Image (spheres, one colour):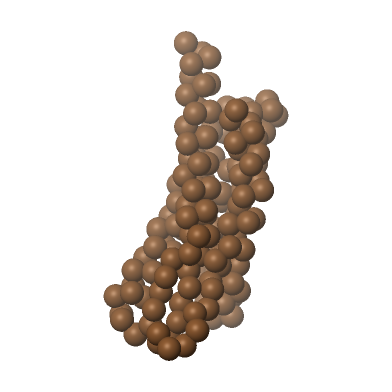
Length: 147
């Protein structure tokens, strides 16, 4: 069950990266632009390379590396001793969801434009939370096997 759920994340993460996280517009009379993880990163790469590097790691590499690491553990190709490092990667990925939520809150607080959350934010958050839960269950199943 854990294997299948974890492998599903390998498919869902790329979908979440391209899905609209939010719709933003300057004024209510103008159309809303959809912003995804990938379009946000593309914008960051043109304006702030250090922040783009950080967000790229948090949004793309951290969750995907954790998912691949958990798959390797599930298929007994990686030792369970790697779990603490993988859990740290999951926490870093959750920091990215917090960063997106902070941007939405700030944009709404300014009151100049309009920001609406979109289904991709929920999918991306669900993937990260699912990965954390899979990691915890993997850790629990390992400790239960030792007892």
